Image (cartoon, rainbow, N blue to C red; front, side):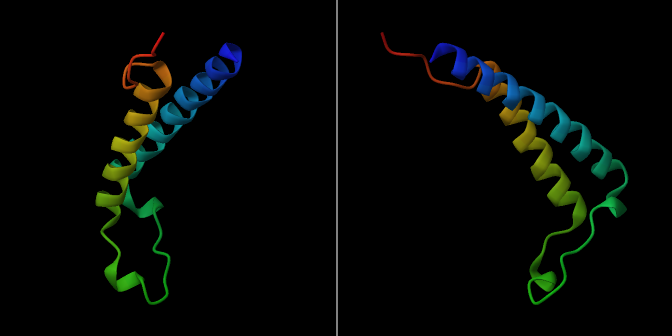
Length: 75
């Protein structure tokens, strides 16, 4: 079970790093994020806000996967 937790943690760190790179790129060039269209398009935040939220979420994913954001394990 410990191996499974470690594997999930490694995958979370890898996905968080890739997401952070993609969101940083989207902050620099927001034209890569296209609008979804439809009736929700008028209420969607700007691409920079979406990229900033994705960057914060990716950093949280890296921290949780590495064990720095998790609560302590009970004995």
